[in-house]
Amino acid sequence: MDCLFCKLVAGEIQPDKVYENEFVLGFKDLYPQAKEHYLFISKEHTTHANEMSENHPEQLSHIFDAIRDFTKSNSLEKDGFRIVNNLGPNGGQTVFHTHFHVLGGEKLRGFGA
Image (cartoon, rainbow, N blue to C red; front, top):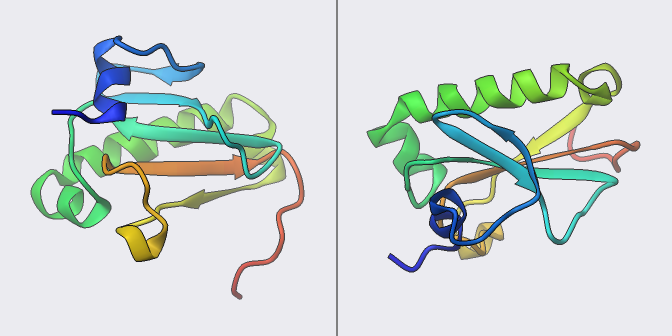
């Protein structure tokens, strides 16, 4: 498989890690859209969130537990943050390994209600 994020998990490419456990890897985004911008991925490959939810729902729990642990250990929880997931080309997904963006460290522009 020629998946960029699978190469990160395999250690072929070294990301700027901020979190890791046996199920999840968290690292800084190379093209940050906020003062703090991280990506959280399952170490097991799925293409998008719907596939993950349908076939491997436990991965969602692992990822959101990791995000909780990470944001509690720094000022993100205190000051607030946003979690974003893009699905498919029209949704803005450019790497087809399910991932969640965690953005914060500054007041983010409004998004919906």
